[in-house]
Length: 77
Image (cartoon, rainbow, N blue to C red; front, side, top):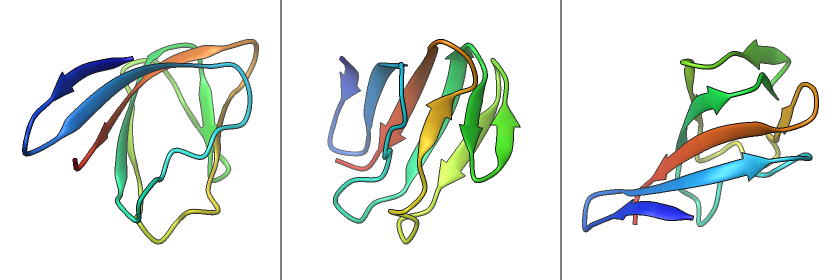
């Protein structure tokens, strides 16, 4: 669910259990891994990691490496 929303940014806490497209509305997404390992673009991101999914990367997906993962997605409003 949404944990912060203002005129400058929006932060959502998401539990990822399967492949997920993090980019919406042509905006980039800053992803923060809270729990579990996340796969994106052939890379593994562990808890505490940050990575950016570019606005022109709508084909990129993220998925939990095993089971599920908890992430924050920060986007423009």
